[in-house]
Image (cartoon, rainbow, N blue to C red; front, side, top):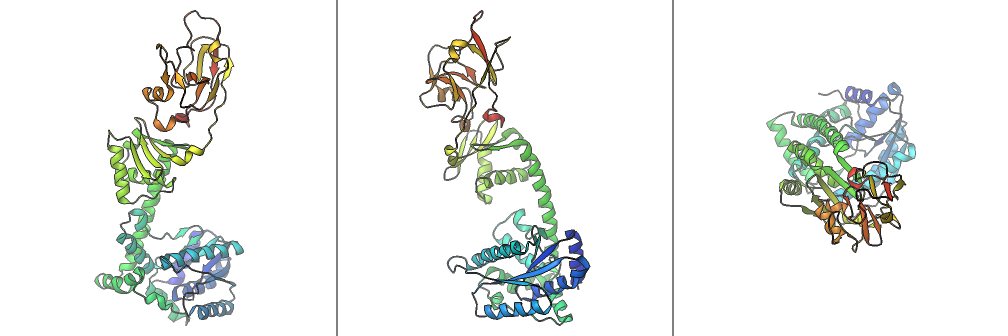
Length: 434
């Protein structure tokens, strides 16, 4: 049998001196045991302790539970907040109650300025959560289930079984209230708790505890993969709306596991959570050398170029992009790098401004005689499609003199021995340089 007091003591040491612990107290066996333990250890660790009881108003016993919570907390000298919430009875009642409960807990946490919120989830809860996520087809992020500490939420009992907690309650003569809804097998979690887990426990005694231990291992594995993702994204992801892209060649070198996680992270920036099938479809699109555009959601696309994978959101069309005017300096030697410096005929820059391209813009490419629509010019130069509406052009009227990074027009080009020339220095970063 697990020593509950020792387990929480060790978990407190890992927390590194919490100042105020707020316990979510339901009056049930688990939270009653945890409240008693935290009260017992309070002087040893010198933290403030309070609790919050959420009154859902969904059951006849709710009022009785509220009174029990008030009476017990007063009897052991722990301040309590009672928050009454209204839960929508339409849709998924279990999820609605959970969401409202966590909102109430956060409200209580802010009120007392608690740095830690203690939750009484234990090893059996962890096993149930893992099985629920397994049933829904979850990957690693679901199977790792609940972490011990994800600020501000702290679950010090994840290595303690329900039977350990019941033994602790009996040893300390602690009373608690039983939520009758916990026996309602219409809820998936309750079905697993009362009908499935006992079978596993009979086949392999200690099943719940081993599942919880596995979840801890998976949490650490997930943390490592997340750190690898973070490192890769810091180096290869560029995100500055309206631009969002990654280096495609670097992406293609990744292990399949990281490829999946990276594309999910890219899509989360646009509030898209990919399931397994959607993830695999996106990976297939990326690997298809012929495909260049893939719809992720309404108005959101994955777009490939030779060098980059873009995630383009139609909402960015409302973003205003402004380009600074280039600085004019003496021409000096050479013609400039064409990206940020360009030498051109002084007459060509008179009245020209740096701006976004327009549909009626045209350019006479250097060495040619006829004009070309600017968007066709962008395409012929291999410019990534998501860049085209936002790439700076130096234009006079609808005639483009210079496209930084792409080329100069024939009418602005400097001829050998020509006088009356100027060097333009463009100081902004181009879209592919963000």
